[in-house]
Every structure is written in C-alpha cells, then in structure tokens.
Length: 154
View 1 (cartoon, rainbow, N blue to C red):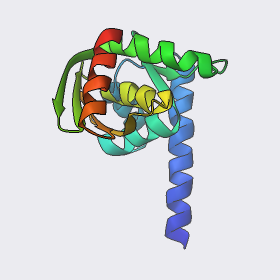
View 2: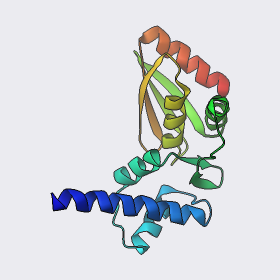
View 3: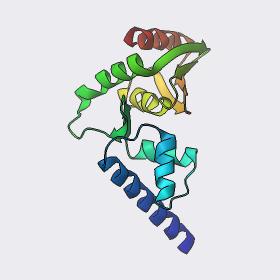
View 4: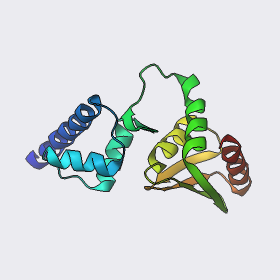
C-alpha cells in the first residue's frame, strides 16, 4: 500500500513539476521537457512523459508545449484540429479501417488529442507515438472519408 501511495505522490509531484516548468514559458520538445525534469530529480521515460502530457491536457504550438488556454470551449476544438493538421500533418495512409497519420517529430500527441477531442463519429480512437498517429475508424469507408477530411484541413 505504501508503494502505491508513493507512486501516486510521485506522479502528482511530477505533474506539478511539469506545470511549474511551463509557467516559465513553453518547452519546445518532449526531450527538453524530459531533460528539465531530470534536473529537478524526476527520472521519467518517454512513454510516461507522453501520458503526463495527455493527462495534463498540454498543447504543442509553434513555440513548444504549453498549458491549454482555459477559455477554450467547444468552439475551440475544431479550429484546433484544423490548425494542428495544417501545421503538423505530413502524410496520411489508409489500411482498411485504420489511418496512419505521419506528423512532424514530437507532434503526434497533440494531433491525436485534437482528433479525440473533436468527437467526430467516424473516429473510434487514436494511439500516438512521437511522429505517428494511428487513427481507428468504424469501417473502411469511414476511414477513407476521415482521411479526406483531415487532408482538406491541412
């Protein structure tokens, strides 16, 4: 039980450390954020950091990772998808009901988060790496329509 409490406290402390770092301004990459966390005593891997970024709802803009704007409502979701697709999507390939969306390095997480937040009915879910998003669509035809929709945004 103590171990679980330690992990929870450690995660909470790590999240706070990330937010504190971002209070000083945007951090341009996950690697730099990871390095800064290490200097603060947090040994964190890329997968854990990606989860933290997702859980904290951080966004990546041209200057790097930052906190999401607090005044974004549902009106802000689609322009965000549009902006992220235009800014970061490099290539889209379809394989049955799956789309492989290639992005610039370090941009897959925000693109996936924006697609998830869009609540488009054809998107079942996403899985993101560093420069690749796997988008799962309901069927082959919906995947084709979704690929066209994302291409039109970019």
